[in-house]
Image 1 (cartoon, rainbow, N blue to C red):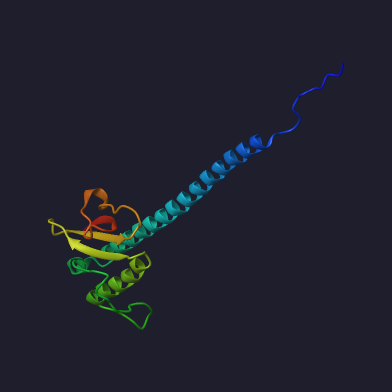
Image 2: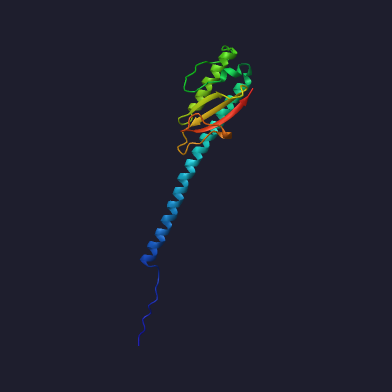
Length: 162
């Protein structure tokens, strides 16, 4: 009597398709993580640029402390033009405020929908510096509990005291 062995050798087509499906789902998950990573990296870059712009302006205000009150009301949407760089361009303290605003406008303009604003606080010896940008996500309020001047944009704020 002949006996025929019915043991399976190799992999069936069904098992191969299931393995391909599992690998495909894993690769899609990795792709989704990569997209999220790129988005978060861009957001972190914009936030660090906003922090840098806010602290740069606060340093400029401290350097020109005799015109502290003149910085109140600066908005990057106004369009400032003053050059105080170089030996030939010696500026007064008031002209330096305009030059600082022009430089700050350029810095903040590098952010997506970037805007900047300097607002006097209830304490007259304090100014709120707000840098706002479109982060593509949910807009955030200002840092340190401050209210952002434009509610639809992400915002970083810093208070500078005289």
